[in-house]
Length: 315
Image 1 (cartoon, helix red, strand yellow):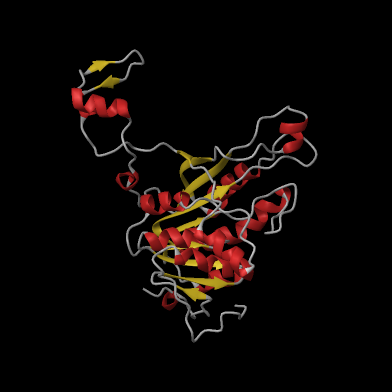
Image 2 (image 1 turned 135 degrees about the vertical axis):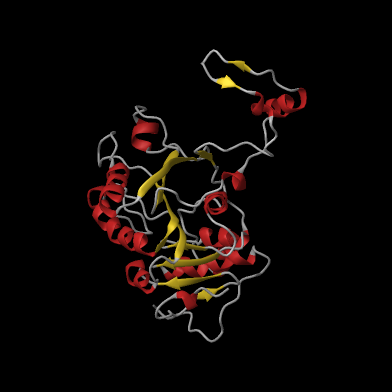
């Protein structure tokens, strides 16, 4: 299952599991090692464009788009024709003002118009547990409500990316279960929608919406505990495991290859390992990569370091 054999030439692996491998280095230097049309899914949450600098690195909103397009051109090259690119982005306010930057939308337009991606669908990641920020406008002056949604662009190389929503069906609501049990009389609704008898067919679950409600409340996971025990600071901007799991289930099959070029604590790799997808993770900060090792002790101890590699070597 080793994915390093796909790279040309192969790179030094920082650590590997049964299905994947993590690499230490700058993605702009690592991406050229991946052959054309190799990757099925690129799924990532890069550093956002924020007014206040974060310790994990981020660009100002006015320079973010140009910075990111360098990576996007490589993404387009390495994705298969039916492959997908899922990009999670947080919002930003203009420095000193209670109005928003629009860098996410500027980036989306240029990804489609210049790089050649298609917008397969827009998603929104709602985190109901997010703190009320930005504090200046929400808590102090009380002129805005808290931000709780990230935009998520699902982009594709072609007009028909591989996808199967049967893999991400959700349990039926109680009312739908009752309808399936008691039956439904076909009729025209006041809205004009014609609800036929096919509406009561049991499809083994409900098709999810493009609003993903995923609380990010991780506080006592094995990852956090082991980072603390080892004296490693956990990555401060982790997305919940269910987020990459949803898109991996939706857009890939077993043994497909998933890449996260801004891996952070490597939640994407963990989700890929759990679903038997091959994966690659690129991360610039060695401390975050060291901590990400502990995610794979949560996957039935599948993680194993290659003893013949120098794991402290910068790629």
